[in-house]
Image (cartoon, rainbow, N blue to C red; front, side):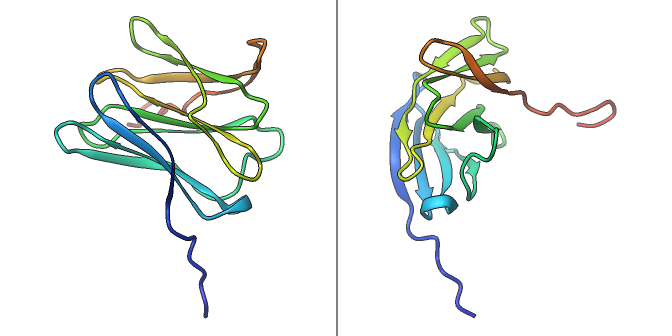
Length: 151
């Protein structure tokens, strides 16, 4: 059986946080089967990666959101949105709880946009809102929380 490779990764965005962590967004695959991965390297050498696989934003959904952290690393957020989204507002547990994210890249083909946030240590993600040019909310994402008795 011949299984085709998704191809080599392609770096589409890079940045640095105020805390000196370096991040990069890579894509694998092409067209409707493009995966988007966020990798963060922290000043002490720790690394964290995560993202979303294949397929674009489906149906009536406006955005897909990955949020996660490795053991002992701050939280990273990766949003993949429809082209109509201009900004993403994330709400956190910080004392200044709202951050307005600008796109860091546009994916080839469908024109979906990519947004990134690497939060300072100790801050958690509450919600994300996809906004249009006028600042109207087009969609939102609230992370699942464990139910009673689950962690």
